[in-house]
Amino acid sequence: MSTKLETPSGALTLPTFLPDATRGVVRAVDSADLERCGVEGLVMSAFHLMQHPGSTTIQALGGLHALSGWKRPIITDSGGFQVYSLIHQNPKAGTIRDKGATFQLDKGAGKDAKKINLTPEKSIQLQLSYRSDVVVCFDDCTHVDAPESDQRESVRRTILWAKRCKIAFERLLKERRDDSARPLLFGVVQGGGSRELRRMCAESLLEIGFDGYGYGGWPLDGAGGLLTEMLAYTRELIPTEFPMHALGVGHPVNVRDCFRLGYQLFDSAMPTRDARHGRLYALEGAITSGSDWLRYVYIGDNKHIKDSQPMMAGCDCPVCQRYPAAYLHHLFKINDSIYLRLATLHNLRFMTRLIDHLRHEDS
Image (tube, rainbow, N blue to C red; front, side):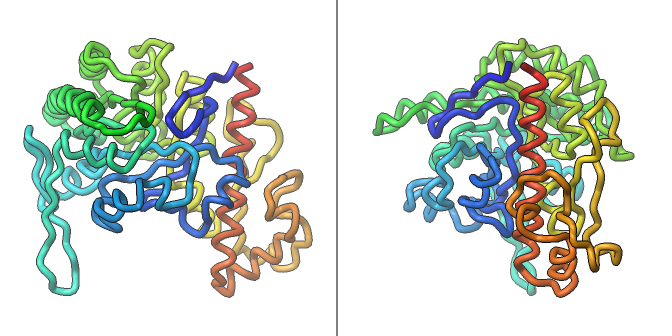
């Protein structure tokens, strides 16, 4: 039976897929579009939003919900993923110390690089000031292929930062001058491909105490395969009464697989990015244990030039209900901006229908 995750902006029915609205927007669609597709929550990036439109602007408007017109739950990424994507992958992009991370951002056009300092305390302060419903601890994210010494250091630092995040979170909530509902705080389990390190991190985070937990680190191996064994082991380390977020998991087959491992929250930019680049999702029969049920429709292929049928038979999205595949092909070929919206609507509805199926599978 699916459960609910109660947040200040309403309940998330679990399992749930949360599109990445990294900079406060899911590209090409607005909040009303997202609601029509059945989306219940979004993930936004504190790291990117602090740069633009900027913290003072977000706070002046009353938070991310007021800024974006999105009234449902928002989870904010702490900036930990940027530690991996920017610094770990390019040491010239910044430094990581126990105090926090310093990012050297190239502003381009010959301008001087911009320096951003992000500490556990600042990450929590930003997320709370943005009125996030689920605040995520600042963590030291790594790739599973990183050396064991790097993984061990990542876990040590992630635990240290989690303690500081919890202290800052509780202190800032006490200092609030309003009676707004308490947001949730999630810890992130790091450890790469080491069972020992995953267990060490999970046990330490459980001792600190959080409302939920996330699987930290890149969830795919070097060949792009899902790290099923480590995902399963990490889920086993966290008691089932706590919700667990498969951070960065958004491929439909991977969402299905992680759900069956016990994960309840998923987020990714993949479905919307695929849509914009002409790769649309379609069901091919029943959702089984394999991957044959997922079919890709490459809408730019010539076979769709005169295709009078909906892009996916039986789909209830507003696109398939109204337009033939030939029209999407035409819009894609002439590079019309309306294609981006229609394609995104379809892939998002595909994901929410997949989630609906998983909810019934769990009943």
